Image (tube, rainbow, N blue to C red; front, side, top):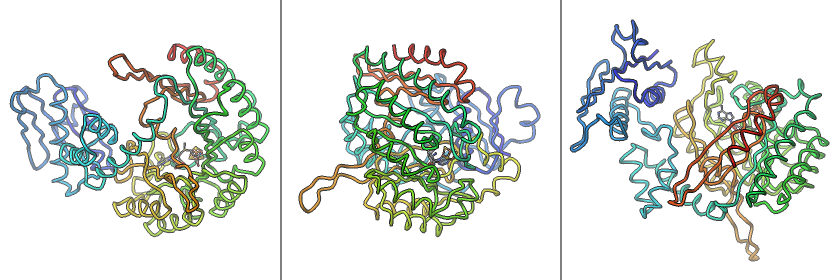
Amino acid sequence: MITACVNLDLYRYEIHAMLKAFYPAEDVKVLFGEQKGNECESKPFLEVCYAEDSLTLTFHLSTSRIPAPEGEDFARKGPVLKAALKHGLYDNLAKITGQRLPWGELIGIRPTKLVSAQLRAGRTPEEAAAMLMEEHRVSRRKADLAAEIAVREEEILSRLDREKGYSLYLGVPFCPTTCLYCSFPSYAIAGWKTRVGEYLSALEREMQAMAELMASQGKHLETIYIGGGTPTTLEPAELERLLSGIERFFPETGQVLEFTVEAGRPDSITPEKLAVLRAHGVSRISVNPQTMNDRTLALIGRRHTVQQVIDAFCMAREAGMDNINMDIILGLPGESDADVARTLQEIQKLGPDDLTVHTLAVKRGSRMQQWIETLGYDAIHSCVTDETVELAARGAEAMGLVPYYLYRQKNMSGNFENVGYARPERILPDGTRKPARYGIYNMLIIEEVQSIVALGPGSVSKCVRRGEDGNVTIARCDDARDIPTYLSNIDEMIARKIRLFS
Ligand SMILES: C[S@@+](CC[C@H](N)C(=O)[O-])C[C@H]1O[C@@H](n2cnc3c(N)ncnc32)[C@H](O)[C@@H]1O
Ligand code: SF4
């Protein structure tokens, strides 16, 4: 257990996140006021003392007094103090642990957002990368990656209509089984088979209300994403009903830039379901291995084999799917770099169009978190190093894919990132152009440049508005996470969503 005590209730989240980043296996507490009680009487690991002219960080063996920069004071408790606190914490913890973090002191902020702001201010990508290194202690490798992705994203997203375009997300919260690491809204389909019709009716009511509202505002649909959960746990007739519903309520469905179905679990994919997806114009699917190691698949509760991944992928190609994404996770329990290398080699043989490399995040509410609480952090044997991440980057490059989106989450193994790689545009020797395979919706949820109307349990709708001064404001509302509450409160959720977008 690591305890920090603060004299003001200020930036406790940042302190907690920084300590957790350096000590992922420890339970971290940041205490203030009465909470401090006995725990801060015996010397805590860290004491933070805010004063008007300085900030003092006292660790077990060292004390740092950080004066306010010239011409500034800390009394305003604003960005200057926050930046000084983060620098002070990072530099001291790096010294104490002998470790540097790949993303330095960046917490809760998208690296690409910082780069994009620099590019808009007229800096070059190299200058933006240098800023990440100097001001935020980001490593050279990661700063260059963020700059490369930000430039590519800017180019891809410039094709979207930011004023009148919007995206639609539909969640299907059923899965064949629940995976060890997962905290997404997901229910084992076996227990819900008889109520899928009721669920689809609720989604249709949401679709109708939102389609009418968006059309009345002259908005048009640009991308559709059906995620989950695992949408292909639905039977072919249920999928048919869902997709016909989308076409009925959103007449632009046939013209969207991208229509993704996150098929995901290979054990849920059949030729009949693929035929339904094709018939309704689905342009992109995922077939997710997570790992090409049968032992790990069993351990994480996927209940499918490597052979089923290969079969589902080939089935999708035979059905005519020419944009297939595959997801993998680095740091799965017990996996070494040799396992990751094998996964990448096996995937390369299949030749996906898009590969998303996640780093394991221990999510609250996942079965993995319960494991850790009972057996301790070491029980998951999760290890991701620079070499593991490099291995994945080189693997993607060998498949002809380039990085195009990036995001980070809390509690990620080794403090790394999730990166999406995809095939760029190609011109074949005969002059034929093969379009790029970037997943546009993936970028939209991270970069928040367009409104997303999201339907289904746990989904989060975002209304993105641009003021006359060009400033962007984002308002959100989410649907209830559990299906029974979602079903019984559907009218209220529709009303909230209408208010959000009106
Ligand atoms: C919404 S999930 C659903 C995908 C689909 N149901 C499947 O399992 O194949 C999307 C992706 O997030 C990743 N993911 C989910 N939980 C994760 C975690 N705790 N840490 C890292 N990646 C995670 C997995 O790679 C997964 O394929
Ligand atoms: S990872 Fe996918 S299949 Fe597994 S429980 Fe989560 S949503 Fe379902």
